[in-house]
Every structure is written in structure tokens, then in C-alpha cells.
Amino acid sequence: MEYTGNPDVLGIYMKGEIATAVLGTFDASAAKILFTPAVPFTPGQDYEVREAGQKLSDFSIPAKTVALAPKIMGIYPAQDSVPENLLKIYVHFSQPMQYVGSALDFIKVYNTTEDKEESIFLALETELWNRRHDRLTLWLDPGRIKTDLIPNRELGLPLKEGNAYTITIDRKWKTAAGQELTETYRKQWIVTAPDTRKPDVENWKLDAPSSNSMKPLTIHFDEALDHELAQESIGIYGLDGKPIPGKRKLNKWGSTLHFTPSKSWKKGNYEIVVDPKLEDFAGNSLHRLFDENLGNSTRTNEDKSDYRIKFKIAAE
Image (cartoon, rainbow, N blue to C red; front, side, top):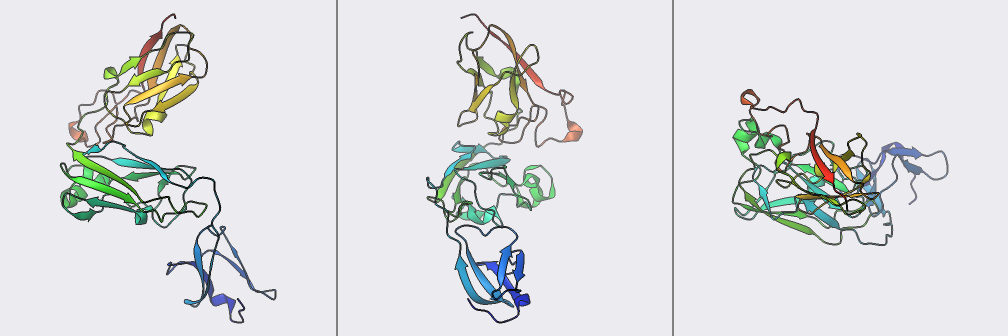
């Protein structure tokens, strides 16, 4: 477009954005006014050129073409039922997602039992994405879960035992390449009684492979565990203290972990080393309950830096 006005009152805005202009610089030294954004324009996004708040023109950035249509790979916990004191969930996408003002603009929770929309997630100024920006962590408001905190007394728990809820993620959410999701995603949950016990490694069951094989070591937990922490908090070591390289695969439900070594197992003794930060769905760690009165604590393992389980690989 041709423009002969004052570039100092020009601004570039994402379509629908009212207050905040795109960061960048205007250059009016040449015959044409050039705008250079501080961060590249987002593929698939519509923009408007405004003069002193009034729209002059608009333009769109073409979406990038990718081989596979974007979709949500899953929400964890994957179970159809969750405890009343569920602490957080993870949303996994097949591709990196756009940076948006608030992810909660695309996520709705509906209480189907009481026929109303609910606000259960904690709105964070800095959202919890992984480095690749394809996994989002959403916390249910901890202040409402912790007994006798003001949010708990005034609003109650985010989820209510016996109720059914549906989480909906809008297909209009775009990837970093500018593509909308393939379809709107829905996940339904029935809420069960609160989880008031800690995970206990002494109750884990092991299926140990024989030597000279690359069959996985299988660890059956005493309860379903946090989907991400279960994969980050458990290591396999030889008694020489050196880690055994290999791959971890957690089952969909967070109840069983398979560890496949990079090289065949050797006959001998091994250890599973577990970081105490490991938690269940309610945020109960190996050390303590999430909703625990510290003044009345009966904890005995707070000093432990880790938990260890010995196992043996027998001869073939």
C-alpha cells in the first residue's frame, strides 16, 4: 500500500489484538516505508496495519507446508478417572506450537455433571513448555488443593469427587508453522476419591531379564506415577556406580516402566536409583504427601538423597 502520512503513528498488530503492537522498527528513509519485526512474523497469522489505532490495511503470512497434519498426541494422565486432588496434566502435540497470549484461551473444561464451565487451571505469567514447545504442563491451582489455604476455603478443590469433566482443546490453535490442529480434541474424566498415600518403592515389582539378552527390565509401580517425572527420575546402575545406558519407555497409564539396555545385559548385580522428586498424580512424592501439615509431619525419609532397589541378572 502507498502511505504518505507520519510513520511515527503507524503500528502492526496481530488481527484481533487491541493494545499491543508487534515489536519492530519502521524505516522511512527510502521511497517506501519498511517495517522489520523484532521476531519474524508468524506463519498462518493475519495482521493489520493501523494509523493511530485506525485500520489502514491488512495482510497474511502464508502457512508453511509440512508433511503431516498437526494433532494432539495425548493428554496425561491418560486414564478415564483421576483423583480429586489431581495436581497437573501434560498435553503432548505432534509438532511445536505457536507462542500465544495464553494457552488457556484454547482450553476449556466443562463439568458435565453440574452442567457448567469450570476454571481449574492455574494461569501462569510464564507458561510451562518444554524446549521444543510441543509439550505443555498445566497445573491445577495448588492453593485450592492445599487444605485450609484461602483459595481452598473460598473456592474448594478444582475437581469434585463423583463429577464428570470434559477437557476440550480448540482445533484453531496453530502450530509454529501456522497450521491449525487436525480436529478439536476432547478428553473425559470421572473424578474419584483423593489420593492420600505416597508412592513406595518397596512395593514395586521387577521383571528382570537374563544375561546375554537385550530384553527390557520391567518395573511395575505400586500406583500410577507422574508421566514425565517417572521417565526422568529413575536410573539403572551397575554396582560400580556407573549408569547403564539404554532407553526408557513408560506405558500409557504411568504404571509400568520398561528399560532396554544399549548393550546386552551381563550377569551380575545392579541397582535402580530413584530420585525422591518422583510423584504420583496428586503430587505425593517419595518423601511426603503434597497436602501435608508440616507441623504434624511423620516423615522419616526427608534426608534421603535417593532410593535404591537392588536386583540381579542371572545366567542365561
